[in-house]
Image 1 (cartoon, rainbow, N blue to C red):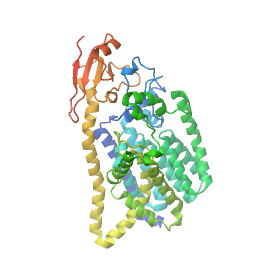
Image 2: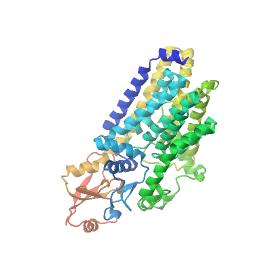
Image 3: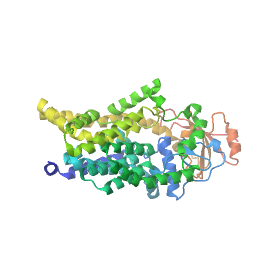
Image 4: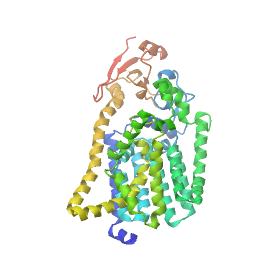
Length: 484
């Protein structure tokens, strides 16, 4: 059956789809998102990538760190990102070449190639085409593959591990699980929790050998992360989140000291509503319409196929483990995609949705005819573009304000000096790079700090005050020189 399917559906179509989607990611990154690290998370990854590109782990701490705080970046005992190194290590390659914005789209392409391999081996080329479309067309994946977030890099490594694990269920081969373990280890260097949860999903294979092989492949990378944490944060068992917590509390208050993971989050009423909204946004706004229903149908379609039993269990386990974990995490809003912590579930959903789509097409054609079924299918694939457009309309004004500060300083002709950021959250704007050696220094002083106090801290330098632009107003930053 698989051979006939491959001959009936040429493989070049799937590869062409991967290339086309990759071009969309790159275009979206450059034109829609301005190749700009909008969020504090993205900037922190970018800052660490600049350090890696220079061949160092961290930079010297600047003077007056209390006036220079920036989100998700440690300033003591030295300057570095609070995040694991995996995302920044890949991004550093783009920094060295002068095209950092192209790295994440390329990671997305690799993830799609891995998804094609995972689906093609057991389901056939036609289903592989659909699986690639479901994963690559999900607005959540499109957005993150065009940004500097770590989710795309993590998904890339786990997609490789997923493809190898699927191949192992079909053909065996110890080397496959060893390499899968190495890919999981790379994901551990990128997003440790996602890697651990993927490892737990491997228990669905119901055999100790593949799990042990994967663990053996991952061990060197776990050791590498522990060594990195020892070098950056003083102890192999102190991660960046713990090291950064005092600065985060100083910026945003004591309420931010709540644990990110707690069983009480599953029964806390505000968190319950947050979690429900995350699920709603994932199912309605950030995936191809009906993805979850198609995956459920695909699960039923494959129920009696013994060839795919192990891969089917793995796909279901991936979705279930991440969905359950959501309920014990803090679900507050942030400046990324609402359901971004569910990104890895796209692997299982896309793989299951492919046979579900095939069966849904058969049912629709027999019920309403080929033309009507085709019209419905076209609408389903157009809707994600509309959904993504709605997000861009909301995000663009926010990007204008974030990147508008540096643009406003340039338009004002300020080539040297100190710019005091007067904003509700000044630490989101004070981006001075890891070495604090640029001609213009941005100061994120508390609102109670006067311009005279800033001038005293940086004698001999002209001081300016930049007042935050209204949301959505281009060139809206108001910048004045402080009289001396």
